[in-house]
Image 1: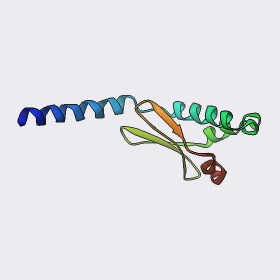
Image 2: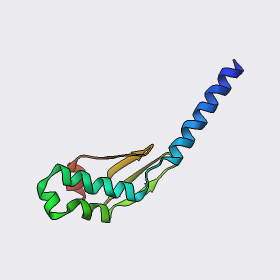
Image 3: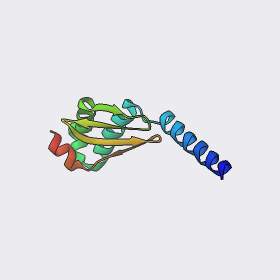
Length: 95
């Protein structure tokens, strides 16, 4: 019983440490926002809206994860080295 509890605790510690070490940087968030918006719309690519959104984004980290906001709207969420950009509706409301 105690051995399995210790294994479980060790597993949680390893997962938490991996999350902290792999937390995406502000640059990774900004690059992903820029690339994702350019891929979603030719107009956004032409006007470089992704670059503008990335420039104005604010980075927030909470240990194992992170997110960026533009005008208090969440634009991207990241954890374990991956970044996901929310739908365009969030950016339309932000600008």
